[in-house]
Image (cartoon, rainbow, N blue to C red; front, side, top):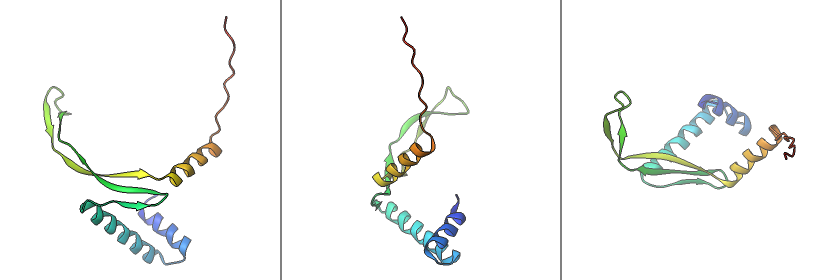
Length: 109
């Protein structure tokens, strides 16, 4: 699902125009981005937490010349940690969609 499709679903779900739903998604994006830039976290209870994490500098391998080492600089990356309700919902959908087949076991001697 892309942003336009998400805006359509949100508009349909809450009874607003697609333009209003898209504006809400854009505002949400801006708020999350600015909060993470300032070092904060955005927590949607049950759904998950968006946070910024610092990835330390490290040595790596040049993909064009595998024998050559390169220094990879430190960088700040976005991270998402799923909440309990989201995890439980996905687990429940996996159980109902794909049941585990039993494998017969034959004793060996």
